[in-house]
Image (cartoon, rainbow, N blue to C red):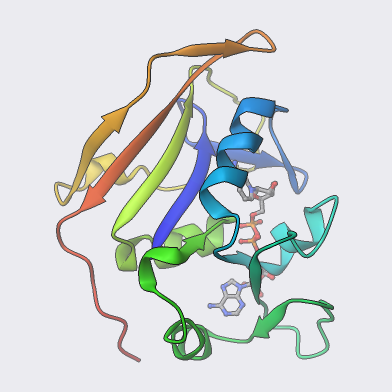
Length: 169
Ligand SMILES: NC(=O)c1ccc[n+]([C@@H]2O[C@H](COP(=O)([O-])OP(=O)(O)OC[C@H]3O[C@@H](n4cnc5c(N)ncnc54)[C@H](OP(=O)(O)O)[C@@H]3O)[C@@H](O)[C@H]2O)c1
């Protein structure tokens, strides 16, 4: 299992249930990585999508709301159900796609992290993720050159986890 996220320098990822920036190159990267694969997200991120479910992907939504409706997506109500479900797929084809509550619970079960680093501090964000680089088991294995789009500098980094945890109840 992997996770994929775009973060600012202060690890902000969202505001008012939306992304912080419109970065077409990042959307393209996300699409390339996840098309034909399995995407896992929380109900808030799912509802924030302009088009849902994400096309050409198996969408899995985590929610505590028993009445949550997500036509064309698989809905699960806890991590146990999630891990049962993803056994049906190749683990490297599964991508955790947010938001913060889902990344922060699932990062330790991921082998790889695809992180778009945006060279900006955003103080007025309301959603932040844990910086995995604080943990010695996560090592950067690649980074692109810095690119610029819409006045923002960013690069695509990939990290590998040498101590992936097994899910136990
Ligand atoms: N920059 C990026 O790459 C990126 C990617 C995705 C999303 N985002 C942004 O992140 C923000 C949304 O993040 P968020 O943390 O607020 O919401 P979220 O993670 O998308 O969704 C949280 C929802 O999932 C439920 N949930 C959490 N853990 C669960 C579990 N173990 N079992 C069942 N349900 C569970 C929560 O229920 P409770 O509230 O009851 O705990 C809550 O309703 C938005 O601003 C979005 O745009 C950014």
